[in-house]
Image (cartoon, rainbow, N blue to C red; front, side, top):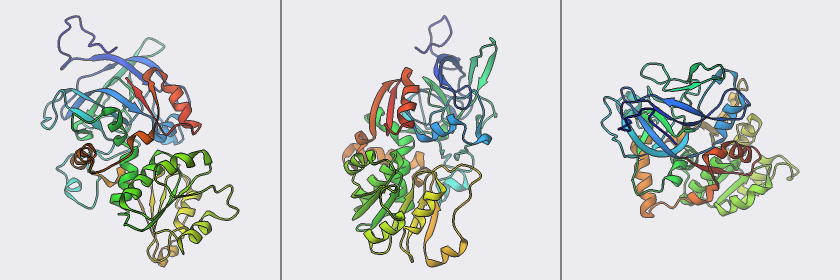
Length: 394
């Protein structure tokens, strides 16, 4: 139970808060539920009471320490969540205590050249930065914890969000105010997975009605791509995964054909070309594997095929393509947060979902619901491929 750490029992505004958080002490170690201190928000920051959070493969990759340059501990991970604003720092005008918000890892200040450009959803200051572990305003942290030696030490931030805590501090540019009637246990999925996948189909690729789509990797992001393609009216949506247990869920989410690379007897791109009369119009790589990316690229149709890269790839592997291969008309591009401008576009998407104008199957992505105290079990389910999204209630 979160407390303000003071005996006066008054408002927590402007005061430190003590609360529970799942702290990562080192790569590959289980998270530990600790009592942490959460400082008040500084200028252009907000402190948010997290009510629901979920686990993404990106969290798992960071916890494993797969990229040495990104290792900084202790740390509070988590970047999919929804909650309520507890207090705001100086200069924050678009958010107020009580607002329902979705944290986003790819912020939007609304004033820089990037935010004013329709060609990108990146922000000059608050864009996603996998190597960043502190706040923008002072390069400091808002979390602290007592270690095993009895010393109070800073706890580092993660992807602009750090949602594995009862309270977190966000840059105001990374908090999206949404319709208070929207169910937060579902809206938390818009922090990453659904927005990334659906947006990749809608905004990045602009999937057209009657087109063919191939999705490599049927985790939550891959299935969200399928949702986006289904809603856009794609005629054939091909799912590729080495785990055939995912195919039933894929069919539920609108995928029409399935390929298990271990069972098809020939390269996947050859199978896809046979299914699509020369290649898919669009392919989406959602695995973070360079060899899979290669297959996704060559599975598209020459002349107009587009490959969208969504997987998180380890360093130092490079792009598995020869530059001359781009001369046959195929294109390849990356995608961050589904190319949504979070603060200016997500509220409209939420309203459209609430009105039934856009029918995204949120429930289909939520395979498990657990108390926050079982977060390590939730990680185990994800690692074993038994969970799409496990929503944790704080």
